[in-house]
Image (cartoon, rainbow, N blue to C red; front, side, top):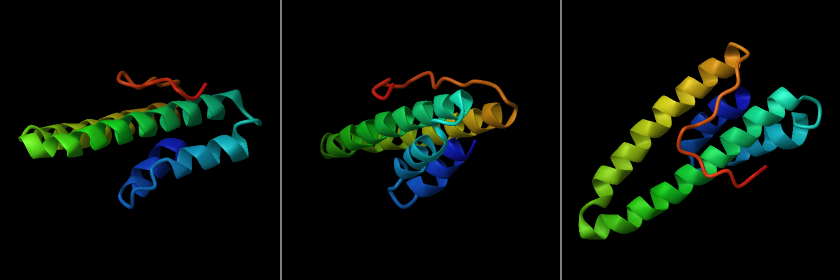
Amino acid sequence: MAAHLGSFVAAWIALGLLCPLAVLLVKGSQSGYVRGHAVESLNFQITTLIAAFVSAVLVFIGIGILMLIAVGVLYVVLVILASVAASNGQSYRYPVNLRLVK
């Protein structure tokens, strides 16, 4: 749960990648469950960062503002769902996620 919620808090200061990465490095070797959530959260942070960057570039042609809003809303909803699943001891896979970190 810390990997998901920590990234949510850190995202407000553009450091959303650091919390799941820290959880992965510190606790990932001790628990497969924690590693799974940390990797999933880290991949989601990377995916969201890419989507936000593309949206920011598209602001100049007018569609970017709507995309930034959509990315932000989707981010909040999915992080909450992942955090609830983690706190209930369940696995969670983000529905829109580039699986770059294995």
